[in-house]
Image (cartoon, rainbow, N blue to C red; front, side, top):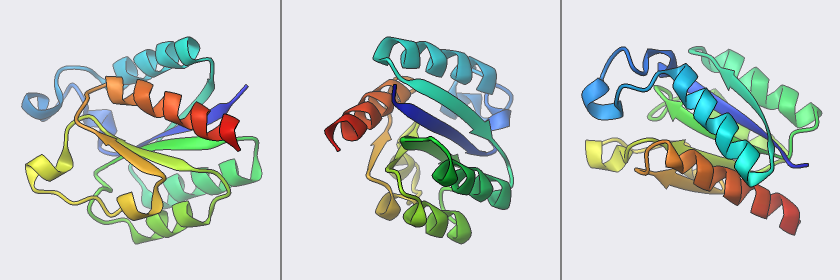
Length: 144
């Protein structure tokens, strides 16, 4: 079974507590619950990780590189416009990474520094973007 690492970046723990006019009332645990449901529907296994620290997040990618992860999904959140070590690390791992954003960062005047090192980006579809990313990850892995 395809194994996907789902990484939540800086500030995701504040979902449902701040900027609810932008991101809605769902909490990070709500996100995780929905992601697990989507994973079951798609037929993939997920490991979910969150950190507000760039180094910890980078270490999660490196550990996955040495482990049995087939693909990753990252919502960089607070890292979106600047996390050079993490961006570099994603370019080094052996598996494809897909970027997901609940909203469209470009519509808010933000440019993602992750797009160039990710296989693709899914933006603006709310939590459903994770479903699309899980489908894409499974497709990519099975086509290798």
